[in-house]
Image (cartoon, rainbow, N blue to C red; front, side, top):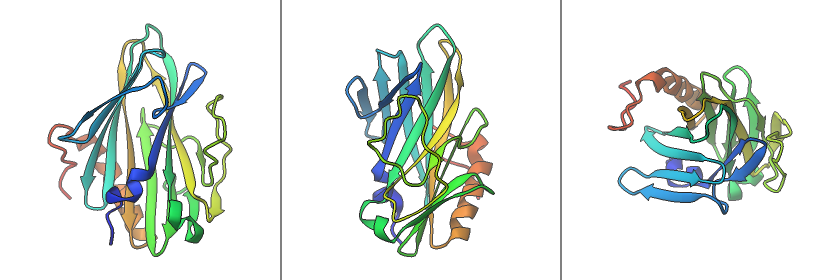
Length: 208
């Protein structure tokens, strides 16, 4: 089995909506600094007084990203993080659906399964679309909800919450891989149980 953090997980894209303004993190206005030792990336946008640090952790066949959002503005703000995942050449044989029982996106292709999930401020996925058009404007911070699709390349989810003035919050986003639906569901449960024990310095997510 291929480890998705070597391939599929690299096809992630990040966006943020705040103060009625949306931007992808790979667009102009963002400064990106990297730490090669732990693959950490720090995105800073002085125009919107926001910085986002993404620290990936790998254990088993799950990638967990610890995301720290720093609000450098002197007022509370609503923030929405968007994550897209692109199957690219695997899309023609894919099925993607939202699983309400676990509040996650599940994608299957070529006898592989992926599960996308996350949490911010003790709240899980808020918006989702299983067949997202990357050219669709997100100026309002809203995606057209779609719970099921076939042969779709890109899926999108959002994590949403409020961040206080001059404070920071943490969010978590993860992708689990497995040979079947049960495997990714089990990995999702293990990840959720271990979130309180995540140690960013040693990159250990507890023993299991």
